[in-house]
Length: 415
Ligand SMILES: C[S@@+](CC[C@H](N)C(=O)[O-])C[C@H]1O[C@@H](n2cnc3c(N)ncnc32)[C@H](O)[C@@H]1O
Image 1: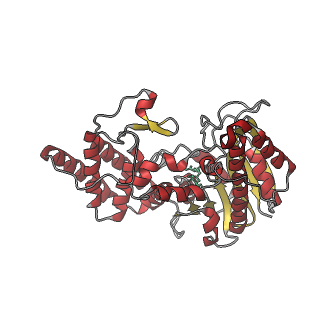
Image 2 (image 1 turned 135 degrees about the vertical axis):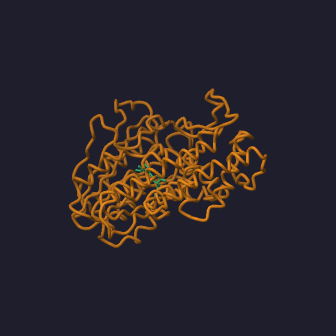
Image 3 (image 1 turned 90 degrees about the horizontal axis):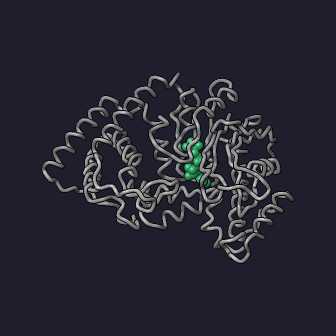
């Protein structure tokens, strides 16, 4: 099921499987406060745990929730719907039927997102989805559309979303949209049937995702109830989850106007450099009493003063907001975990304005200052554990002092 939705920041299921084997002893509660498209939650649910997540991006939250509910789908009906859909598409295209659906009004792009032939097919597909009476089936169709929608658009991920034409690729004149969606649904039906068979044991509640910020919502989890936290928060690399999912958010009706995106940006872990740089000097929280963290941020702040907020000042603001949000994360984790339980956090380091920022060690220090024990920081050799947005403008390159990029697993224990 991990193939359903491409997510650049997804992490490996093997890491989660291994974590569950090592750190749980019988069925328990597993939490992912930054659930993405649900890798941790699906694996935890499959292994018999109660899976609970938080995810601020409504598209990612929808993807996770739809996956976690897939074992309840009426598979025969879903397969029949995929066949009906192809029939409907064939007839509508042959008859020249005009679609009733319209593109999302608030979604503006520099080039048309879809060419006219593709657009017509997409809108017809949305008409078909609109007619579905079974909400679960409609959601699976919506997810199939969202998961494939960029492929037949005039945009692509490089790794951020941009126009195909600006990387020398041709625009998409036409595409077998209906066939693509029908094939995707057939695959999802097979996977959902597999999921139902594999989901061992009964009695536990379905896995669930709270579509809100963990920082504000963590008290929805019973205090001290979580046996393992396994997550990968946004890295300090300014990968823009919201901009990169704009098409999905608008086309699924999860956002209507730029203000909706702005709200998500503000709530995002560390917010984004684009927001942070505009604020006056952001100070690091006084509870972060650590000379190395403070000196590192001061070093970033001192870089490229001639560039104003686009130089060190803006990036130091971004880093300060990020580390201040680490406190919120740690506070929420402390609330949720039972005493003695472990939190595993996959995180990458950063190089900001040429200054190496060992985000993993800094997060560990902040957790320690807020009452956690640091059981270890593991840098897995060779294996990919987390998201590898290594080509992002922030992470690329080597710091002056020879540090490269790496990802590590911070292991914290709640005393
Ligand atoms: C690195 S990704 C997680 C990927 C996940 N491990 C997977 O395999 O799909 C980080 C996620 O954190 C989410 N996020 C950012 N700020 C958040 C917040 N305050 N509360 C909950 N989720 C947040 C982002 O939208 C993003 O999906």
